[in-house]
Image (cartoon, rainbow, N blue to C red; front, side, top):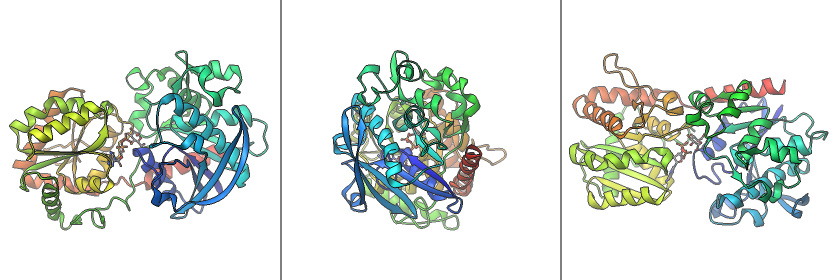
Length: 479
Ligand code: ADP
Ligand code: GLC
């Protein structure tokens, strides 16, 4: 039995701010449990919802030497569908209303978490063959393991993998100001960890990890060039021998149009026309004009620049005035996008609904009800929302970047193939043209549209294929 530990800053079903939590919560369930003993370790944030906290039980506590002195480390655990989750407790670091705060706090907090993970494993008697780290928050685990535990018998054979879910977030701060990195050798701090005169957690992880992966094949290429590398393209090209892309899947149990308790009218391929009832119900709930012939465009997203909302903003007025569409948005993020959607919702109450906030319930309802799902991202490492939408027959309209390019096949009206609509350049007019095209197919070729919905629902974006690729990588790495 090979032992794998996932280390991450968020994970379903305990704490989620985005797709990372979906991946951490789902992938372990799909790995072959006969070959792998797979466990997950997360911070025990104060902001974990109370119902979830009640599922945790106390395991042990101890003190470890760290630059600040003797630090308390409590360990809690929970079991979800056979997967053990550990939680590192220390309220000095993990207090506050959300997992992430100011970057200068976060770098020190996640350096602590990474050290605490390594300190906890011997206490737990769990000696992983592989520690699979996710994003910059845990990217220092490969560094600490090699710098501090190089000759240690416990970790002697442990390998590390770093999966990059978003190259933009690197964990950068002033080199001398991160207390929990102070005792690393100066060679490490001023060379391996340094990028552009700052400490860069992601860069250090990329160099120290035995394998580096990202969440789609196209993104694995894009980050090796200036358009996607966010300044680290040179480093990534240098390590390209150990870099690969494995596309994400989605949890087919959580997102299932036939059994989803969060949508009012579950439906499947056989009764696909029932999806309309979900649209009517949502229109009513959101106060939109109740008309099932209108094309409803859904968006469930962090409202940030990455997701292409500049383009959406630019065409909203024109789109609402020229084609018969409705827009239902759910998200939180930058003020400018929250405000502009609220503005449009006020100005066009029959056509636009903006829910500013986070709601699983509403997210499912939008996926279940919308005709199309708009995701014109500037860049997208993988993207899960388009996959979730497809599972509910919601046809994606996306920009051809990263995982969107790998998972959405453009509609071909001559061959009657494809699972969505896509455009290439980050350009509002180009996007609007493709929305108009989708609108034309929706209104004037309803049979073709329905066939496309079916192709979306049949497309296999479950975790199984990708889980097999991870398993292969684990076994090769362990040797
Ligand atoms: P990212 O991780 O970059 O935010 P993904 O598409 O990979 O983008 O994953 C986003 C996940 O977060 C999806 O499961 C999506 O449904 C969910 N999500 C995003 N915003 C919200 C929100 N406001 N309410 C509920 N779920 C949300
Ligand atoms: C990041 C990316 C998103 C990806 C998710 C899970 O948040 O922005 O594209 O799907 O991680 O890997």
